[in-house]
Length: 371
Image 1 (cartoon, rainbow, N blue to C red):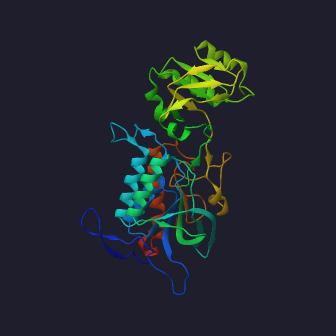
Image 2: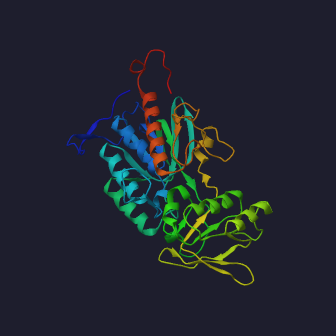
């Protein structure tokens, strides 16, 4: 196959950057053909875009601004950033980096996907909105998108590609309350590995009714002795009484009530107000919700990709899905922990696997099959 052409834009080395457009377009084809369509513009998708574009593949990143990278959490366990870096900054820097090497961007949501004759056809619809993130973070992302030449999909618009990388992420069932979006990543969290350290000596409320929530509350004792757990629903906890006794034995107060309200100001939750007759008020500085994110797997299903019992995309260590030409990376997959560092690694692996498939037979070792 042919390589991408070159435009007049210069990359950081002062050399011409490859075009964001398709590497070739067969005669009579109604739509351009990209080497790879990447669905999702978070850390996994952008890592894939950077690495594929550096291999001089034509890459289009399709994103609907509805992912975790637009919340306000600060990543403090990502190597190389001793003072931490906001997830939104990783996203903005990643978009600029991918664009430097010629990746293109399309704002829209993939609503349908099919494959035929070795090509994939994705239908992308525009007018997306109302997704994850704060207004300020979304506005910054929109401004950068315009400066990078991000296109906006019509209704619908076809994207044709030789390979597809699904970096579609997850949906988090956060509790709904006024001011919530400003709280996510500031005082409302979901991952001890990411944010437990910042809870040292803080008053922490855990919301959840399952064994996962009980474990989260007990694990939080690694950082603070001020831990409270509430079931967060009227049915109470769904764990044996013995587990509730273990919570009490470890100094963790457990309430079998839902949370009636989350008083907050400027992104800081101040208390959990319970739905009991006394309207018990539990002062907190941080709230961790124990929930199971929902993998965004709609496109994977349409392409016949295997899913596990949780609906996560099944991949191997090289991010193959089992459907030739389709790869997946990031939180929607089942292999590694759902952290930014893992997502970046998986995106790179998916890019390497897709790039190998795109090589001509002569460029692969004799007897090596396409990935």
